[in-house]
Image (cartoon, rainbow, N blue to C red):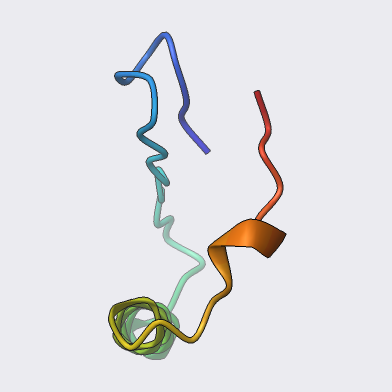
Length: 55
């Protein structure tokens, strides 16, 4: 996870580093997982009040 001061305050960025031991199936699974998470975020399925503030 990349947080302030590397990125602006309020921004959380995940840095993924694929290696030679990762298969294309691993990459596909990861992309599909992030797509599902984004859909859930957009639909409001995650309660913002329950997300832990790491600051």
